[in-house]
Length: 177
Image (cartoon, rainbow, N blue to C red):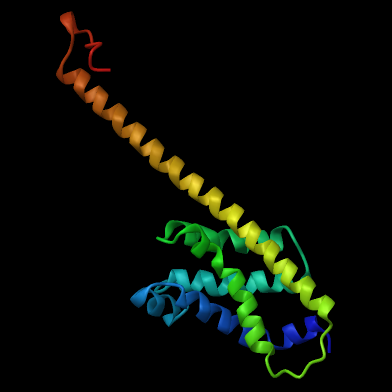
């Protein structure tokens, strides 16, 4: 049996372990609530994580790049980018897949080619790098939104000050700007 067949056969146990490892990356009670159930409405984070790691795993097994892995990767990183994690911790969900696979393969008794392992681990490493790129873009968007909010608030404040303190003959005060 080759590695791809074995990974397909152990798919459910690998995905279950990977999700548990991701949930354990959350602090305290958050770890319990994220991993509690995967209902779309009562636990949207757990739901998205469970579904997107499955899509990511399938894309990885098929050796596909582009949309089969970028869409689920982006959804996972969107969640992680708004949470209070340092960047390294946020993207660590991808290397956790290696740990889940290694644990599932222990005792499998399969005679696997080292070349296949290197290829798989190389694809996971590549996903980690892509995850960091996606995480960075998400954080840039968040910072842009925050900056735009500050600018809007500043503009509202300036307009309010101009209305409260008009210059001579109804003109705005140049000292306020």
